[in-house]
Image (tube, rainbow, N blue to C red; front, side, top):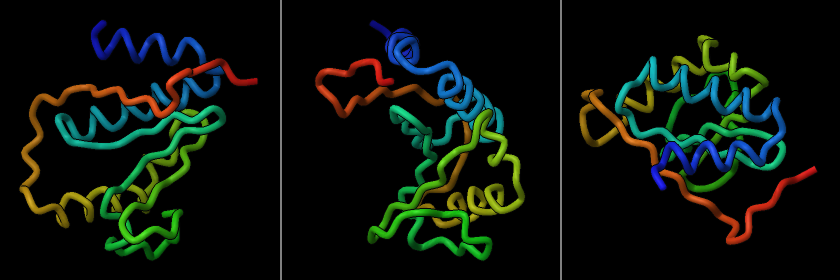
Length: 123
């Protein structure tokens, strides 16, 4: 099964509003950052965008959530419209600048990881 087929199978088990948010986030991020490594996590009731070095990023608007030593996240709103906000655009730019390897864009790939061994439809 290809990664795209895996994604389709996983999304088929999610509520329609969650699917809409996940697809909108993926489309916006692929348009803005083709080939970039980004982490979008789909949970039973929400979708998060993860910044793997988010604890080190300036966040004057306070949009990042989390308290770990490294990772911060943004819980995405329906349709992922928050990705278009100046605060989030600034965080993405800061994350690119903070990276050890220069960002070049290019063709990316979809990687699916599941946490649950037995994913099931949630209410």
